[in-house]
Image (cartoon, rainbow, N blue to C red):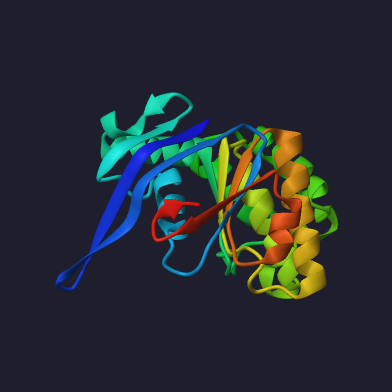
Length: 220
């Protein structure tokens, strides 16, 4: 799965060097829902960027499915990210001119999956998140919770090893946020995908399999 070993990461902010992570060790198992908590600036987003293979560590090892990502080229990182990682965003990031089904289908289309298999997998995924009756609707016709369900279906459609979620309930009301968190936990366990979720939402900690708290770039 995903493992960070003694990972360090710094960023240049003007004339200052900001140490975002200071020797982080973290291992995430298949099917686990991991909650990353901590104040702003604690290092949560940096961990997401490293686990999502968007950024590289300055020192230490980042492994995905046993592969040391430090040895991979940018092209190889892109392939790993495309094939094994799903992303869920606070603002949904759906394509407004595409239907629900087309949004969910898009990652499979990019991966060259046949039209027949795509149709079958999209239908099954939309049914799993309770949106099969909304397949031909545009995102603007959906509620915030429904749009986040589409985003979850899109993240899971390519059967990823890991799903990265950054504040996925921040734009949702309390009741809808509860439903979305329950759905992510349910689908992660059902499909064997590890969810790594950064959030200030205390409801997440009640549903997580494990909670990791950060402060000043270190695990607490």
